[in-house]
Amino acid sequence: MNSWNEQQAALDQLLALAGRELAIYDRDLARFKLDEPARIAMLTRLLTGDPNARLRIAVRDARHFRNHSPRLIPLLRDHGHHMMAQQTPENLAHLRDSMILADDHHALVVFDQDQPRCKLILDDPIATRPYLRRFDELWQEGGTPISASVLGL
Image 1: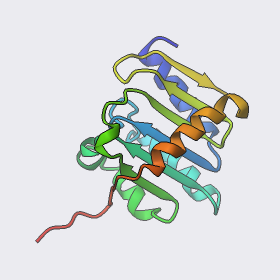
Image 2 (image 1 turned 180 degrees about the vertical axis):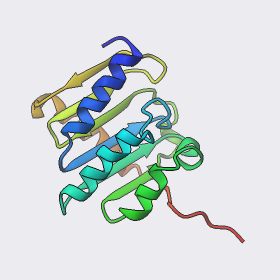
Image 3 (image 1 turned 135 degrees about the vertical axis):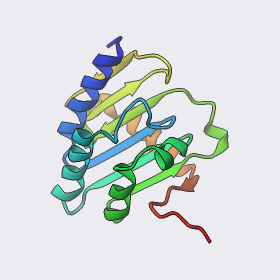
Image 4 (image 1 turned 30 degrees about the vertical axis):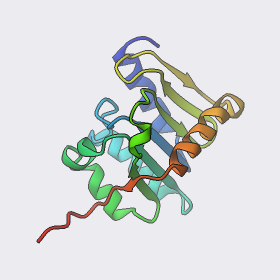
């Protein structure tokens, strides 16, 4: 896929397929537009449809998530037992790819954050496995948890 529209259509297709688990790695979530109502509805369906559902989001820069996601933040607050989000450590800031992985069988892999070129993998656990491993490695690097609450004086 080579256009932003194709990438967005692939994202919707992948979100619709997710039934148990979703793992997202991106620079800041801005291009994925996860805060759109239809996408929030798909994420809510995932989080409420299975008692073992899990949504993990790792971003390199959490500012967009915190400041421009009025629907995503409440989802994190209301489903914190199924949803986790974190900003990856500085040593990963140079990475330029993104990925969304669903149910160990589907993936949307964006090769460069500033380019629309991407690959959609459907119903292929073998082709998805290397990306799952990579996401798990990135997740294990830790980072700063993103909270749904705003602390202040």
